[in-house]
Length: 192
Image (cartoon, rainbow, N blue to C red; front, side, top):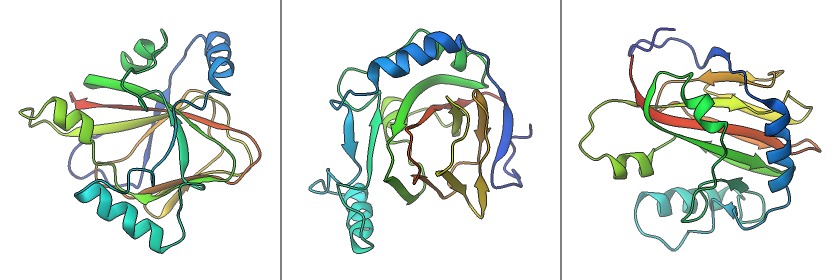
């Protein structure tokens, strides 16, 4: 994998991570009804700055607090962690990485956006290295699970597949199917 500035595809397959999948399935089931970490990207519309501008723009196109909900392990002050997250992080060329399990329920959309890495930048303001995000799929692809990166659609993934795209690449995630879509973002400073 070439992580130079000339990363020349919309996204790239990085590999497949092996995890204790029976434990992962138990953990996903244990949090599948949790609503305490379920938030809309539109809920913080009263804040100032760049994030407020983005949510105001989304509202113009019909995105609301009802169709932009996602569940994340980082959605509250205390991050929810699982033992197998370290197994994922250890397989990727990242330093100071954070793994974030994300649930997208049917009917929910994460509109066209660029990742801004606000939290990692805030925690490491003097680190000049580039921040990259890898995306791991926690289950096999199901009908209606959608991810578009740049001009390309990603589909028919397998449990454990990891994909990556260059920072600043626009992408959208939607669940227009009938089953929960589970992914894991792994964000950190690129070490290669």
